[in-house]
Image (cartoon, rainbow, N blue to C red; front, side, top):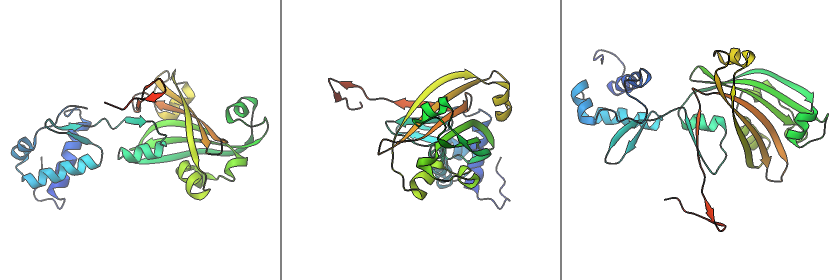
Length: 250
């Protein structure tokens, strides 16, 4: 189970063993893993070594602790939203996942009637159209199409499209993003989209349409994102207002 003759530190070997137990579903999502004492006896290691391995996996987003109950397996496909907009890049960084953007195309185009309406611009206004696959831990998770008004975003090339667009907007262009409006829809994968995501046709997808706005009220972009239903899940926290007063979370 552990190789005492390996040059790899014992705590790292424990981390990899726990990860393998999660991947093989021996340790299940939201279920408690063996206690420190049980791991010490099972692996014949010190308490300090076990705690170091567990602590690292908590920081990496594989596990979470509940006071008085133990350490549990975290659902690393779950994105939690609470009254604020975060980008996919930020969500994956928070979950401790490796993200790669495979750019399929970056094109200069003119807005069709449909895209002009969704971008709040005039028909035939110049836009950028980006298509890319979001690959998480070497697995294609989403197929994304982004439409950006040139009047707001300036020039965009493939190197920009391969990175975080939010960082480009905020750090390179010094744009102030105010909010996003997102619409969620359950759809089935067409053969074309299924091929891009390496899944069977008619597999369930979550289609998320996003409109991103600046603090001056201008719309920055419009995105259609097809997420694999087996690899991406949202939890959204919504506070209720009674007579115009927001209720504090319990």
